[in-house]
Amino acid sequence: MDQTLLAPNQAATEGLITIPSDFDPKETMDRLENEIRAQKMQVLCRIDHAASAAKAELKLRPTELLIFGDAHTGTLLMQSAQTTGLDLPLKALVWQDSAGKTWLSYNKPNWIAQRHGVLNAQASVNKMIALLQVISTKAVSGK
Image (tube, rainbow, N blue to C red; front, side, top):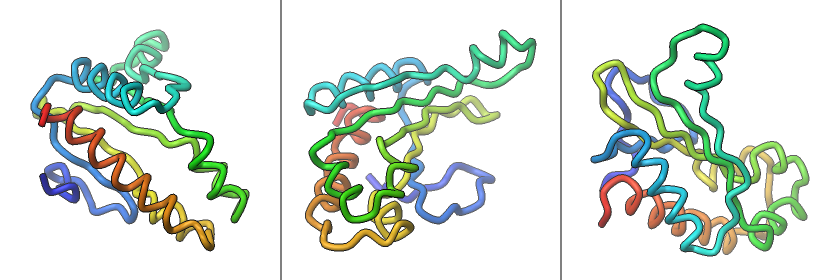
């Protein structure tokens, strides 16, 4: 699956991966959370932005954020550049566009590393890239 496909009418955003899902937003997020747990990563928080908007009497299409990570891998990046703590743990956003299509977006690990000037952690970055590709592919397509 091409992991650089952008949503219709969405401007290209540096360092962002956005892929389409075959499932509705809730199922996509549930599948994503299950895949993260299956990979022995820790799910730290699931935030339903649409529910928060509704409490404020505002409308927002389904939009959920999942915060997750692995301390062993993330710490290696933070040991090189502590400011990576701004972008770690990892986050993934599942959202629905105006046409009703569901999307999964997350930051590229190599972009995070480059942004913060991480040195000597390419193996950890490569591990994150591969793991996110597996997790996201299973979450959006079941493959």
